Each structure stands twice: as C-alpha cells, then as structure tokens.
Image 1 (cartoon, one colour):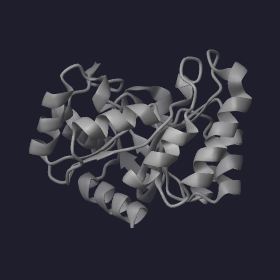
Image 2 (cartoon, helix red, strand yellow):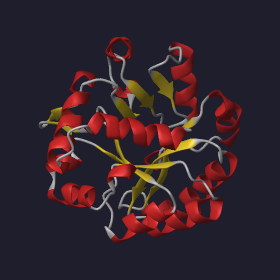
Image 3 (tube, rainbow, N blue to C red):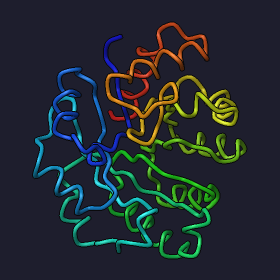
Length: 238
C-alpha cells in the first residue's frame, strides 16, 4: 500500500527514536510528529532535520498542565518553524478538570496566534468548550485526534470543517466503531498515536501503519482507502 499518511505520532516517546526516524523516512510514510511542549519541539528539530516525510508539530498537550507550565515565549518563537500545531486541546477528565480555566486560556492563546496552521487536536470531556473556541477563533484546519466524545458533537465539528483521525484502537472498540460510522468518508484521516495506539492488540510500530489503513478500509468497505485519505489530507493542507 503506497502513500501512507500518519497524522499523529509521538516520535520522542520511543526509546529508539533515531531508529524510528530513519525507518519512517525509508518507508516513505508522511508523518506528523506531535510534541507535548514547545521545548520538546525545539529538542526534536535540533536532533532531526525535517524531511519530505517527517514533519514536527509545535504543541502543548493539555495533559501536561499539572507538571509543566505553558511557555508562551517558547511557543511564539517557534511558530514560524512549522505549519503543524499539536498536540494541543482540552482535557476535562478526572485528573485535569480542576484546571479547566487555565486550559481554555492556553488554547485560546494558541488558536489566536496560529490561525494559518494545521492543528491535531485533543478533546476529552470538553466538546462544548472546544467547539466554542474553534467557532470563535475561526481556525478551520483542524484534525480531531482519537475522538471519543458524544456522537452529537461530531456533526457540530463537521460544520466547522473539522476532520477526524482514526487509529487502530478505535477500530477495536464498540464506541470507536460507532464514532467512525458517523464520520463522512471525505473527513476521514488516519493516525497511529504511536506508541499509545495499538494495532492488533500490540503497541504500534511504524511498519504497521498499513494495517490500520487495511482495517479501516475493510470496516467501511472502501477498496481505495489510501487514495481517500491522501485526497482528504491534500484538501486539508492546501
């Protein structure tokens, strides 16, 4: 299967990241390597050149909020070094909901300053708040990563122009499959969320990306799934 795209991958979470970096380039898989803090983004681009196949995204994961403050200056000084933003978003699950206000302030700042960028967005228990921020900010190039919220909000996010990235873990859960059924074919993308996503019950490795494509194509009965994903991605980034 040719022309595979992975829209959400954590290169820095692999112990053997130099080996993985080399393998992705050899496999020619277009991969958005997200980061959880601006300082991590800086470390990644210092270690590894951006290539035709590997792009680094500037991020601040909302799950970092209990441990690392958001460095506005670091975010702004790196903003013109990439066209991708992620992982960013909101997480109001048990461990993070006490800092809702701070999360909202951070995401509003990010959206305001990165209007022309492509986002890969985390959302957990915060669908309404994320919808309102995106509607107000006017950011239109949004990928909702591993969405697991209420199906009601899918239509609302679609109306804002959002895309949804599907991974192997979603394809192996009842809720994930129900969400996938509610996403139009022309808004689908694929991610691995490696190393957190799983394929066939095992931790993702980059030579398994084709398996996610195959499983999604089989589930939706789409023979040309890689062509569909490429066309969707090209439409998003242009």
